[in-house]
Length: 239
Image 1 (cartoon, rainbow, N blue to C red):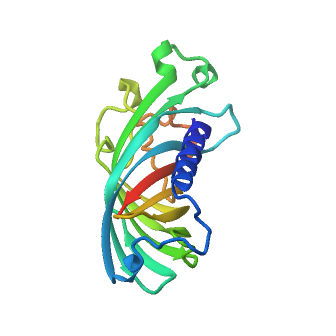
Image 2: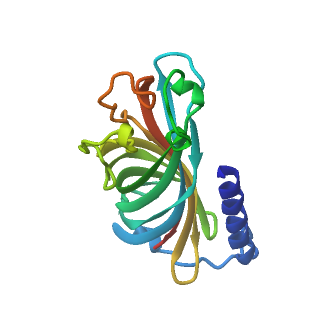
């Protein structure tokens, strides 16, 4: 699934480049020449995500498989200019994702179970707030590549952390709050009326997110030491 997302991202970006004919010629007319001079600028983004889990186990057993689905991102951007090469950005947004944990039947050796017990669907809706440093190259005609990195916090609106029903009742519980670090790359493309930016970003949790079941010998959580989100974002920004 991630490969398909990457291919789509590359083809979309290439099509933008092709529409900007003679991109690297010295005669190129500069669009929005003073766009980046403003101390404050704003915009919004739309995009897609593919969320996964990095799971550490207490004992060496067959891994829990994470079945991923494409999610959706939407949010706002506030940009503070430091100089021609450095910016600070705040990007609050809404992130929706869906993952399914698939267990081997070896987790249930000696136990009575049904087929539905081998899977747990985890739907998450996050209020995601990154604080990022954007480091750009010198503008080349109507494009400017950059890298970006920083930290973010997220509130999981779908969290069932305090639910008294755990996996014995079909509920895999997740924590409400999380902290991430983020790293990414992108290209600012200066069009006639606005700046368009495709970007690719990795998101990595710094906290354990699973809530253990009440039963210390639960087949679903007893062997999980840590379970942390990692994800891939493809965002398209308009400023």
